[in-house]
Length: 278
View (cartoon, rainbow, N blue to C red):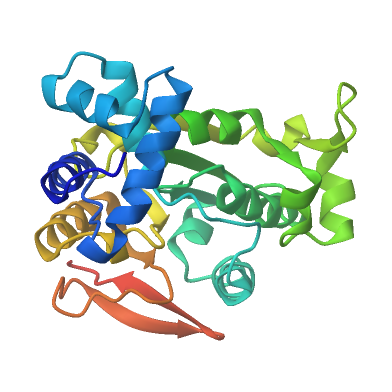
């Protein structure tokens, strides 16, 4: 059964209030498709039965599953190579970079999805640390979804997933075939050693997460309304250390959102550097 316009608008509003993610009327069909998938997973008759569950708040697990399914978890290793080239070449080798001055770099991979971004950074930081043994780092990996966060924490990826962005050298050096199923690869334990994982909704309180030299918050703002964009950026300002960096997605910008950053072109990538007194 096709859901009514009013039903879909109700669910779209629920998703936006919970996660900030906007579904335009043109994309309501995607929302209905995901509702049908969640309904089937919970043994419900159809999306309409799930709708009544959402409206009456009678099954919190089903509500959480729909919110999880509503997120866009598209990702890959070293997605947008220019961003990672800039991190490795222009930041890690820059003596004026805060982390280098302190011999300690703290990175936040926000809305990290299944963890490919975070492990890409870990590979580069591991190389940096081996070259300069007195240096140390930490990567904090967060996402709203328990499902994708669990995969990131486990570090288990299919043949198809590791082929998206990983060179054979990086794959063989930092991953190993699983014994139970040769179609899957596991991140080697040493790559995880300086990583921590936690559930964070960027629209809720995360003031206890600490401060960072670099925050990667890519392809998050593009799905948010203007109010939520400003809310997230204003809180990120307080999370990033003076002269630290914010990295957004290629289609995102801080124009109209904050004057606390300066645009820095590092190689072929755009980074936003927090002003010294920002």
